[in-house]
Length: 432
View 1 (cartoon, rainbow, N blue to C red):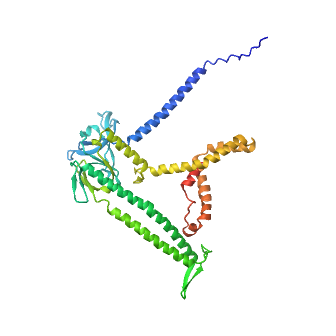
View 2: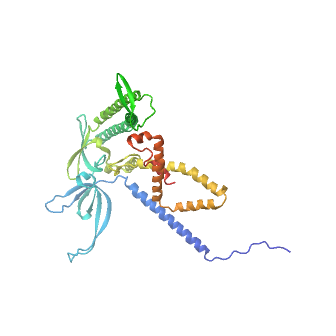
View 3: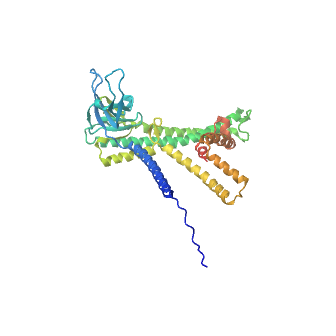
């Protein structure tokens, strides 16, 4: 007798296809919303680096006694504002008013960098050539009309001259080079000397607090003080002389670098730019106070692309200025990268090995079950709890123990912790 090995027919599920389609539609909508939101964020963020056209706007005066106000501004928003009816005037009705958000810059003159203006108050608008957008070391950006460039040689180049922008860029490149050289001396050379000088002065203080150096009959003796920091020195007086000689040598090296930096600073700011605001106010700024400058109304598409890439590059690679309101974000990027790298190095080996052991080798029992319960509970703990734990264990306990073992001299002399304080090493351990 022939046996039938065929499988029984699958049960009919009339709603199965519908559920699959609904799940697919939901997933697609979710992905569209996520990538759409990311696209809006990226577009609005990158738009800030695109050079905007500078408009010369004439605003109607608010009274007959005032004169029309002329502004150099970039239009950042063109929107409609709803104005409700005024209860004090029965005949008034609600209406929509078109308004502009203007970026004027020069907040030291206008009191603010942005202002809102009703469209009907703009009596004239133009986009003249030659207007400059200046990014300054202090005060943010300024939208100005250049008048002349005063050089240290006594030569004056008017803005109408064909050589004006070439001379402007040449002087700006020179000031940027001087600024970079001064920064290199301050951070690399003087910073290195200060670190070595601090170590030498720490050793000198430790000896002075441990021994009383006395000189009698041409001989010097070291008498231990009460509760000395150092107790095992053979010849404290000779060691103190050596450290003081090294301190003098480092002071001389510090003075040499300081003089070199001062010489470079003296070469800065010899050239200046004379410009005018929209209302005709005449001003002068030293070229070392300018970071970057360009003429957006004179640029074509590829020229604006070059300015866009320049702004984006320096935003990523520069240090912040003016309390993080200007400049770049490189320290934040670098710190986040280092913290993530340290965290990955610490987490990956321990986490992977622990997961493999629990899954493949550990015997299933009470201990393994308790570990898994702890892992699941930790996944739901708020990050602030991890922060408090990291502060107490890593910073105060572990960091304090390291200081007591290896940096006890600094603790005894200055009571200043080295590892027993907040740092990127402990920050990288807390998310673990």
